[in-house]
Image 1 (cartoon, rainbow, N blue to C red):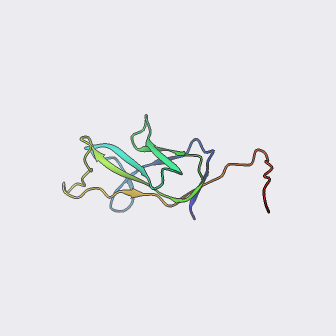
Image 2 (image 1 turned 30 degrees about the vertical axis):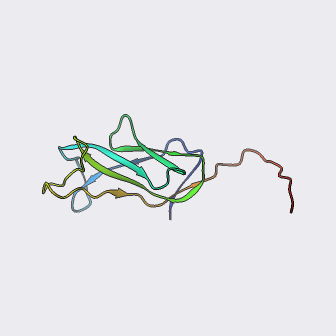
Image 3 (image 1 turned 60 degrees about the vertical axis):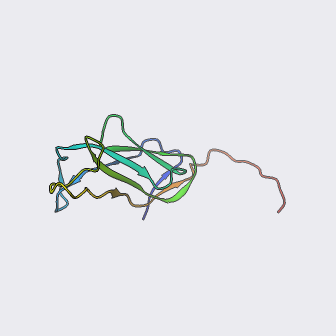
Length: 117
């Protein structure tokens, strides 16, 4: 089931955690620099690195409802290159979210539409 937010959401975030080969949360690598966040549909949802937490992306709905948006996070080293695993040659895989649906906001009024039936 997709994660659901509305066009009015103002505090949704995505946070990257580093895990070991068993899926346990661990510390970030020594050469970690930043995370590059991307959205699959910026017309519906944007994601930007948080100013105070380098592992967090701040999600901002654009005001347009949409379904199936995914966000991705790529770990970079301090020089802005893909972060490498301990072997020194294999890049960390890019993490991708489950689908996110952005729904219309809650009703706040009504409108009358006049036109042909």
